[in-house]
Image 1 (cartoon, rainbow, N blue to C red):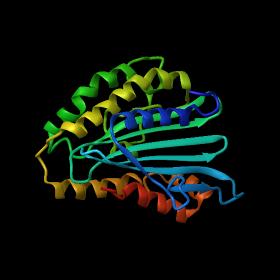
Image 2: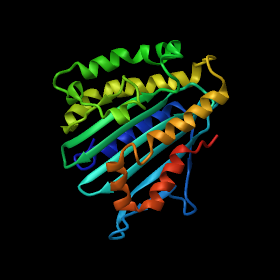
Image 3: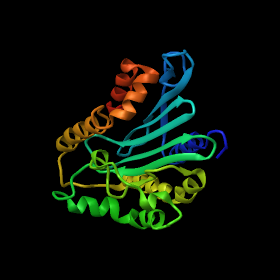
Amino acid sequence: MTDQAFGADFSVELISRISAAIGLREVQSRSGGPLLELVNIVDGTGAGALRLWAITDDNQLDRLIHWRLLSPPVDTNLLFLFGRPGTAVPHFHAQVVQFGPDACVYNADIIPRLDAVEHPDHFTEVYGPITKAFWTATTDRQNVCSMAPANPAIAVYLSPWSIAAGRPTNREELRRVTPSILAYLDHCLALARSMTYTGATAEELASRDRRHLELLHSETLDPRSWKGVHRVLGAEVAQHIREVLHAPVR
């Protein structure tokens, strides 16, 4: 990681790991660059980009998205690896918000595709193997994530295995928890190759996934963050980004 943009470098590291494991085809703009080049509506300066890759391998993954939003001094990087809509493969998510040369908050999760009460066997298969990685990160008292207060409005759409720094920390903590985050990613990639869950139909899974993602990225759920996006990019571009986040490519 570099001093200047360790949050972005962290996302690039994850993308490289995914690319080494599965086939990716980037969906580019007409000019051949990232799908969306983002521009600050106030001064016309570059404000990051949204990149989209289609998964080309014969597995249960659909798309990879990296959204970088630059609004100095804040550098926000969000990464999503989405399972296909009609499968039970969970979505991998990681985010780093960097502000300054050494300060950040972060979170990582495997987002559930079903509910624990109705499908406890699904939760055992998805989350049992990453529990050790979760405890490694969250029981280290050096780490802010061991004391992270969750926003319940957002947390209800994530999993209890989410690793999150809910208050400012530094890149050294991000380094300490990176092995746990990589374990989450590797587990998600393994599930995409081998998962055969039959406790819900493809139609039920796709319908729930659509409603879940719409709620997770709704402006009413996290109004402060989306107001910031509107302020930098405008409402129309913000809506376009949500549409890209939700649209399957396979």
